[in-house]
Length: 435
Image (cartoon, rainbow, N blue to C red; front, side):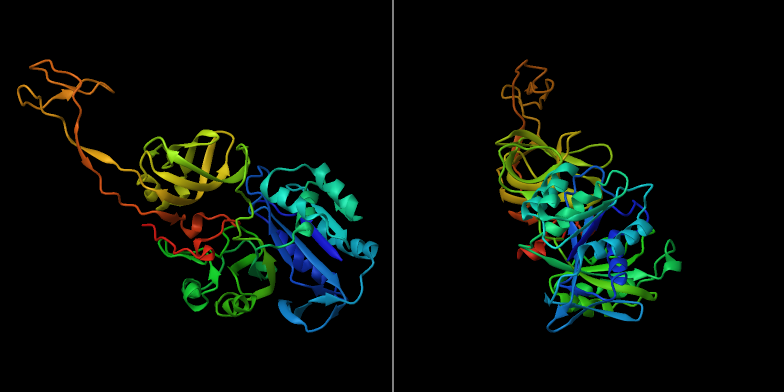
């Protein structure tokens, strides 16, 4: 029996993943079948809270070899590969909806809960992670699956819940999430920075742990939510060991999730035209020199098969902007990122430099061919002229510019990466250190 929920938190309080632990706690006579799911959806959705994540757990009567996947208080949680029987869906719904109602931030969210023995069509997940879909589409798909639903307010959370239940992993990662004792919510977190800084070295299958250039952890939230920290990686067993290596305040509970984080599932690689509020892989040629605008954002215009488009490396990407500033007109690049509607820009998540164009830089004003004196500018776009001889239209003296850039992939620092964005480490590409 699949139990999925979404949109139960606010921008500062609660966490949908914490709800997964409460749902498991409400069903002590049932077993987890497979790992709990944490499914991130379209990051361009304007009404998301933080990471636009939905959760889904599968409960039943486990058979086979159990596997440790969490702990709530003194109770170890185990998951099983298969189930011997299917629980009654009405009974499961009756036990789950009060949990959703209790923990949802009803004044700031539109929670949705789904209980179904048949998963919705997988196409729903792929649409929900890449485009904006409406509630009616999700509800229609849930009806096809014979699902039970519960909703509060507009029930927009049914979209994410349905998508989480519909997810069939093609690529997957894992995350172990540790949660705080209830009385500590809203207070400063006590987690060892030194242990977090060593995670990449000690546990190579983990990623996005520490921002070494800024010297700060990336796995510890800054909000008042119940999460203490979350470690992501490709090996569930190594994640459990990694979590045990981090000294911290008391952990009230922890749970291991299978996720679509770090997979680039949100990136549309085949498209006819670019539509805002989705994320794309776009190839093109630079038409303008990158320029820094107020706020520290760096923009350039790129010619694509869909026309000219502005690409932006925003201020939070820090040193990554220096890479963008080294681009020149004529360079051929691939850009991955979200297309915003206003202003219409492609927000760069990753950059692949395919080909560098020759570039020349000005050395000095040209000399007059008649008198040999240095000329002056005749105005924007009008070249140079000699005031003594009246000769006009001369061009500046230039030399070839040494390019401080190489073809290859570049990514922003850990602190500026999206949940869904695949790190170069997972692409088998050598990460580029940005300074």
